Image (cartoon, rainbow, N blue to C red; front, side):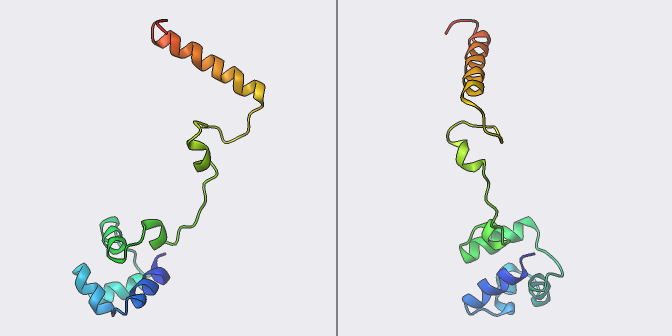
Length: 107
């Protein structure tokens, strides 16, 4: 999974597999296995590799997914589908009533 990216990062730093293995306190063959997608590092090793190369874990594992919900999180939206204005108003009114009920009607 991370083989190609790990090789790019390592070579971008002009490092040998031996040098990276030394930093990770592992064998050169382990680095070779990672780069050839034979084995994958555990989470702790992934974090050490990402920190060493100053990249995110997403970048290290080649994750480029976008999340359509991410942009809506700041607005408080939790719905995957679009709501009509009437639906949205109904839910907001219901939420207000619920919050008052939970607070004991003190609001």
